[in-house]
Length: 179
Length: 210
Length: 215
Image 1: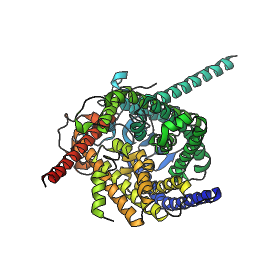
Image 2: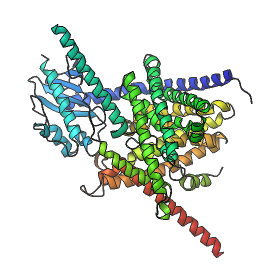
Image 3: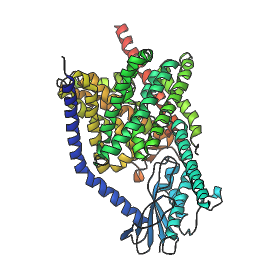
Image 4: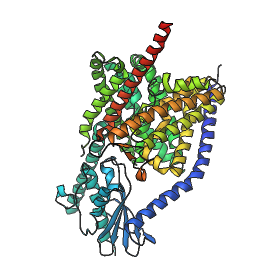
């Protein structure tokens, strides 16, 4: 059956258009739900590192490391959303720092680290919690023991541990520049 | 005078940073994050075309070319069309159509200019469209928000890693296929186990960073 | 249109993973927990059924020259729908499967069934074929998942069962070999599963042959 090129192109265009329309519909349906989930996740992370939560976001800040994405301010201090580069890609974490410039706590929002190794940093297990607890109270730069600091690395996850230190340091450096 | 010296210092620093970033991407895409042996993309042609060395090399080159070209094309489709019109959800559909068109064009080009390679690759040439590595690298470029230069670099380097893995494996397979083994392991099971050991070897690169 | 025959083919004689060696990329990459396996299997099954049905319905309308491009567009559409729905309603599965959800588009099994079956048969048969091939795929995937999770982490049912979704611990902590959950383990375990399948097929054939000889 001889079919002209125009007919071929039009048929393909029709199929693509119908697909696009269907996707637009599904996107309109799921978009708000996805956005809300991300919002809930961020709020939960802020609550975890900054007691009392936050009531506003600070958009005017200087950050030389390029890792600080957002800063939320609350009564107890600030919560910094930082994205240091982990083993594979960026680790998104929240660092809570009080008004004296000391770390209140850290929370890992999302990551793609190796399960069982780097992923333990974000896990709800005793080992993971103990690791994250190390950062509480830190006032100046933190480093892993291999680099001369005081943070114990996770077994087999030096890169992830270093990455989290980098994130905390970026938050501390940025906090120094805030009132 | 002092200003000029400062300027050139700054430029040197930035040049060094860019070189480091480029080297980092190259090393990652070819070795520590190899598309076949670490990320599991492109297994079907890896198993299918790695019987003979020259077919494997030809396939590798074709895939590298498609990956680089697809990275470039999809970057512009994303930057000029999808993002400004808030159509991110159309990424999968758009990218896969772009890849299908590129493979079609490469097919026609090879048929006219390098018919020997066209014959050697046979049915596996159109199958580059369903090669997970091609769509995988394009999606990764978008996810990591690479610039145009880095996207094309990642695509080309990913293709080179694919070629490396498939060529090494082709040379392994000839030895493996002639060896003695239990009946039920003959064929693909043994091939997969050999691939597993190759993946183990490549794991040695996992800590490689710049 | 024989359900039993299709199911037997999907699970054993024409299993997409163990016999046809399609869809290996996802089988190797995400098969590290039961949650992943079931989730991916379900997603692929739904997508295969939907795309088979639509392609079969349109099989006389799509011109031959553009059929691959048309099939890919339709499959990509369904994949994106499933991707968006997962991101909205099952975010844990979405982030666990990651980039392999959009990669279902180039899963050789989906396109393969469309090309080999749906384009030549009616809608109901195509739906059935999609379902049975999907079940076969999920079964093979789940087998690999269970083995890898057990030997790699020592748990069963990760993501679904056990305390906080961590899975029921069967092998104590220090013994499991983490590497099995990494790429090398994927290749090795799939190789052994395929070998096991080939062995099983041989034994079953042998039994039927012996029965025939005795008669």
